[in-house]
Image (tube, rainbow, N blue to C red):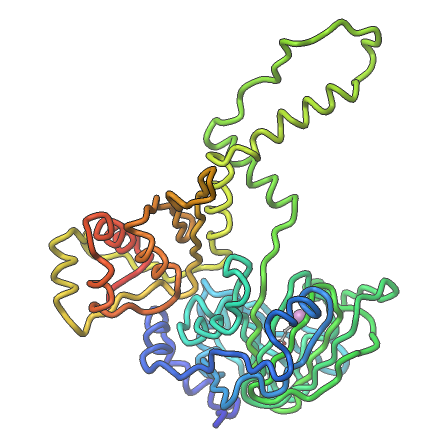
Amino acid sequence: MFRPFSDILSFKALVHPRTSMNGINKERKKIMQKIHWGDLTPEQFLKDYWQKKPLLIKGAFKDFTDPIDANELAGLAMESEIESRIIACNNNEWQVEHGPFKSFDKFGEENWTLLVQAVNNWSRDTQSLLAAVDFLPQWRIDDVMVSFSTPNGGVGAHLDQYDVFIVQGEGKRRWQVGTPDSSLQLLLPHPDLKQVSTFAPVIDEVTEAGDLLYIPPNHPHKGVSIENSMNFSIGFQAPNNQELWSAFADKLIDENLGEARFPDKARSLTHRPEQLEQTDIEKLKVFMQAQLDDDNLFIPFIGKYLTQNHHALEILMPVSPIYSEQLSDILAEAENTLVPVSGIKSLIIPIHQGDESIERSYLYINGESFLIDKETIALATCLTKQQTLTTEKVKSLIINLKNEKLLTNVLNMGLWYVE
Ligand code: SIN
Ligand code: CO
């Protein structure tokens, strides 16, 4: 049962700094991992709804259990490295306060929402919600933001630039979603709060535990809590050109690359020296494009860029380095498990040969790259899944020295740890 707000304060000791991960994850909750699509399939969803139309799936998760409760969320909002906000509206006056919070007393029992970013970086049970969206590539996922709202609490009508799946946990909330509308007015009822004017909803429903709401980018939406309620928002990332070009330029500058000057050997006589001719424009574009087309540059750039986390992570470095011998000792203890840092981003980039066969791949974890060949691909694939590995499973994967090296590197960098 959901604990009333007054209990949040008394439970805060449960989530003391650094024990927060253990406190939250000690007893793993059974998280419902697959969406019950009803009449739809993931393929139809992608064709008809993804980035096009909002959708509410009632009962998408049967017997949904909140991966984190309000007390634990309140505890995370007390931590300085975790981004949190409280948005309240009393007598039509909007108020925004940023965490870390020492106390929640002054907000009372209604009209406010606590929002905590990247809760999946601190709660493995929350991270496991992401398995529900495995019909999309994991590099598109940003984080799971969790909100706790008291009756009448909400952040007001607003737009998000990214796709979001909102899972309703405990409690009930009225969600309204509209369609993009250029006549909507942008409002700033508080310097830290962007809202939009009233919109015509195409979805207007009360959500209950296990319901799933999909909202495409730039669709106005508004959720108002009917009772104390929890929402789990899976947010997606889509870099814009400014961010990509700027990060790519940073790489060239940091690594002293791209210093070669524009080549001009085949120049012919010009009769219009004051003009920049189309042929030269094309040559300049080709000159710049060559950098993007060079996979030796672009792949390390994009692999690192897409696996860097936008929020703090709990990286756990081993006290002393792990070599082959220590790894054997770890694997000899059947009760040990190998665990990824919660929320860590990883991906594999296969390198295709001319004949389309894959000779090698790159594994990226949290911006770090590892060269993978056929013998290490099975282990690398396991390392990209946010799943705890038993020693038995690890032993079946460590079939040669290369695998052992990959695993010890990953452990020594604190990207995975032993529990
Ligand atoms: C919330 O959970 O209150 C906000 C989620 C959203 O509108 O994106
Ligand atoms: Co939103």
